[in-house]
Image (cartoon, rainbow, N blue to C red; front, side, top):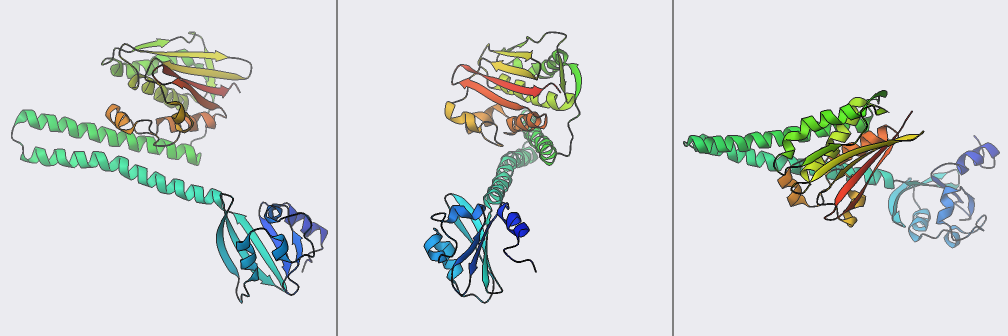
Length: 331
């Protein structure tokens, strides 16, 4: 068995990303503390001292003090972090193992929130769809039947878009779809996106402006970047003002290409900007649902940009419009 004073073992324990404290079970004095665990101590002078005098957190000292026959396991919150603490008794020593489980807790909460959000987003159109179908079954007026069929089709489309966005997001997060970069014409890509979305511009008379030079090339995954840019342009149309504009620009230097989608729309409140790329985040929930959308578009944009080793950010003022910038490296 390797002893605690073995230099290799000490070095290994010292560089662990988890805390290790060793206490003599008879004398109650500290024999070893690795770097990670030093944050739980009152001062640097700890070797040979009683653990109660040195360890700052009372909950940890109570776990060590517990005269257990079996190993002890507990979770504790310390300075807004959550730790899993295990106390083992081995050959007259107590080994205290401290693991920061905050990221796991954050993940669990995010997963819980995600399931809750998806359930909510699906429940609303399903309820409306069910009501529409029940009305169609009883309705005899052809005009009313047609009206409720249109309502049903709209809700089916809403669920279809949500499921498609969820599948895209799942593939991006699992890195199932690898980024396949190649050079292609960005001007043409924007023109194709404008053509796909021009039906959305009619109601508010939105003008789409492609300011990218006709021979401008970008090095990226054409299919994935198209999804990201289409989401940005679609948002700029939907949240625009009457007779507004959507303008797409692009610049390039030796390292990066920056694509900017600008609109003359309603803008984003300053307090919402840090959260705008989170899944299902909506600045104004009632307004967003009236306009449509899944609440996943900007999260998809962020994931696609990061898959390209780039970044996305927004400049916006409430009532004055927004500028979404997407920067990706040229190689």
